[in-house]
Length: 324
Image (cartoon, rainbow, N blue to C red; front, side):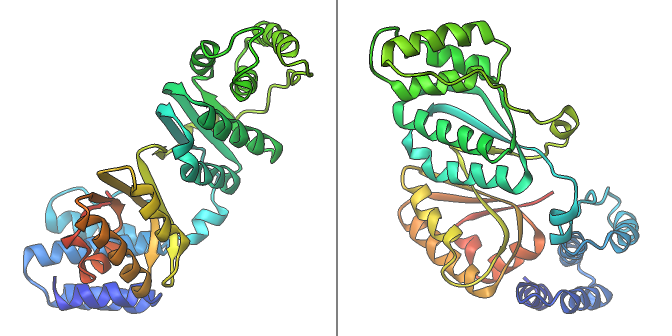
């Protein structure tokens, strides 16, 4: 790593964006080594995306393409302003395997994604089973999002209904949460007749009134087309926005997430910036996991943050994969 790359990474981490740009541009004016220039260009173009400077990005992309004889990265506005004012994108959360109570931390993220964007799409097609604790997590999430008037689409609702249907039996007073989840999920299908039959069976089995048929408003087709990110709730942890300071809750939770995993994947594609202190905290957490024999993969990291991670030595204890 060159001194210019290190300096640009640190000043960006401190929030000095113009100064970081100046460091990178000056380095490009004097650096001749191909590999070093490629790294500097990657950081500069990412900096323009992170700060929403589309015109500068496009003009410099032409120079990049000429110099390296390859297509430049695509423009994505990764600035905070784009997050606040752009059209809400419906993000897709994929649930897979057997859903259990171990996914509690990930369901917190699921709810946060829905509340932040006003819409959410949950893909259930790869779920093979749901235990009682998992059923409670999903039921609370769906009901909570519905109550908050979040536009929610459940892809594969019919599939999950079939899975849950094998776990309930008329007249057997057990798995009540699974019954309620099944009734909830059916409202995201066109199976109103089956819902009504099951509601009667529920009332007779548990001697209480069942939920009413109230199909919720779903995300529109145009919103769903805007979906650009799939989060594997059972497989990946998400870091996003700006992470600042030594005791960031998002960083502390990585340890709990990693407890039952040998490979710990962290999605950093929406992580815009870390400061020096939080990067040090992340290094300490990842180092502990490394000594335990766990592989940590930081995926989709932008070039500015990746350079800071390298300054901190994270590349020695984790695998860092750059964002496209």
